[in-house]
Length: 154
Image (tube, rainbow, N blue to C red; front, top):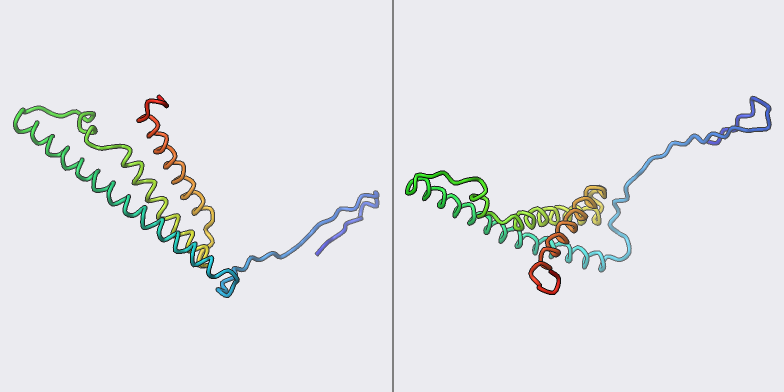
């Protein structure tokens, strides 16, 4: 409803808009472009699956590093009767793998939220965008790391 207030009779009319807005979600699955949405959903599941495999492999490597670290600490403790510093212990854990684990976790969660949004079961666009955007940032940080392996870019 639009209210025009001319009480002051000054030539200036105050205009106020009063409305009752409500947001309703459309949950009708009968929308056009189903074949395309199935292809995108399949692609999202494939991305989540590849990230899950990467997560498992990186997790396995980190776990083996932790087990080797434990064996190293026990050897120094029992055989050489010396304590191992934190810096020496952290040499066994690859920080890049931790970055990949975090990125893969964000990608998997973000992909399933995206699937949920596209199937109209959820509307958490902000969370999906934050997770997938942060994951992309972490992946690019990892890609930039590989430039240090090439002599041309050093």
